[in-house]
Length: 340
Image (cartoon, one colour):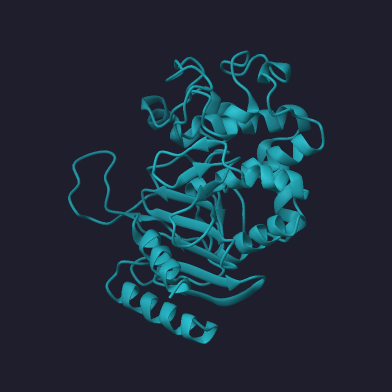
């Protein structure tokens, strides 16, 4: 398909999804290093208050993990962290520090699960630091012996954030701004404190209900999640900023070729057929679209994908402030258009 036909088809798809109220968000489609389409549909604030724009900030949920992983790998490349060393070498006070390695944390093979527990619910209005998050699971038993299997979760990436703090002497959030976001011009990417005003930021809208029975009502997600996200999730970003990040990765402006490929190499079998996990990246091979590398993120009131179709030469980024499958349906449809 030539690019003009692709743009036309994606536009028709987005118009239909938005008209049916199945999609609200922003989309970027690029070929090689050139964006072909950057557009938005729906509203950042309902009802019909603030339209989404291409530079609207969205909660990217677990897409955050690939940002954290690259920050860790930069420290590995600089010799400040070692992938297969027990993390007790850096901080003995971290949970299970003598048993787990950075490799296992990056690949979700350390034995950790998720921290969405009663303690999280009780503390979510006070969670503003990595240390706050560590308290949620410091005494929680591992789900399996480290290194014995892959189990995707969010807790291990909080520990990676703590390691970043330990070896840099900076807060995780400051380090991400100084080492990743600012050098790349990612001016609209950060872990915002959600009780402060944030310009051009989408509110998440969910039909799930964490606090009672699902009744079909669409609710803002203000009171569901922590006041500030963790190194694992709930960073905010835009489609343009994430495209800049993927470009910097592929041109070795963030990591040298060796460490970039370490991120993109399967290190653990995923929980779905055709999906493996590298260092902070999913590696997908469905037999149709070639090798696809990136990450997705799912929240109540958020759905996000940043995917590099490396064999096809395209990058597709879809961010939504609706529940999954709002972004997933769009990204899957665009992926199929790339091979028509």
